[in-house]
Image (cartoon, rainbow, N blue to C red; front, side):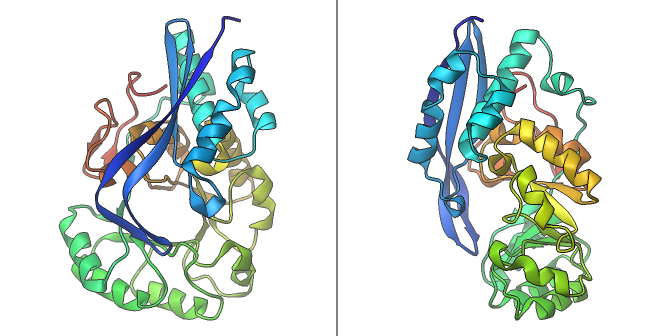
Length: 327
């Protein structure tokens, strides 16, 4: 095999305003980009390190750099799964390898994956956590009818009441980011039922989600922080109705496709989500999202600007990536 060179870089992309969830706020997305060159072909992958999972930008960049020799020696995507733990670092390398393979083969990544050509998708748009008035105004003025609402525990009922009044016909899903407790879970779900919430994402801390098995679930509940790769699936039955597949959690597209297969066999609905990153982060996820009942790939819409060759968004519709971006 021809030699392969791996290069790691860190990029900062300003967010349009402030992005706030239950764990805090930020004004920029810091991403780590992996490039793998073989001859004149260059494969790229992007990841977003996430402190919730013990990741730092410097730590993830170092994990990727540690794979320079194995990559140069021909490590493939299957070997990568065995060599690295799931997470952002492996995701960047895995997606760069997919992109490189596609360019070397003169094919699209979906062809290499053996799946049908991807179609345009409808994505939700995220409303950042704030006061009821702020969130209602954002929902009313964003011009989109499929919304994902970030909640934070105290005051969530008031937030939902204000948002539903502002957008009475919109499809609403909510993401509590582990901010609820077993003690207020039933009451919060009743509020969600009253305001016609379509789905609730990760209401409880992952370590406390056993409480979901013992209550009536009037609304589908989706695992996010509780699911990463295939090894975490077995503990979710009876607690969740769906899982949120994010490439930064699974450690890449390779594992994400396998996780989707296993989840479907176990009867879970599939959601495809993202961290706040550029279109280079979203592009591989559009392949997994082809089989999702709910798509959340709005990361670039939350940025002040995206990559010049970024994904095409038309309202709530996101189109498959061009080869110049990825795959």
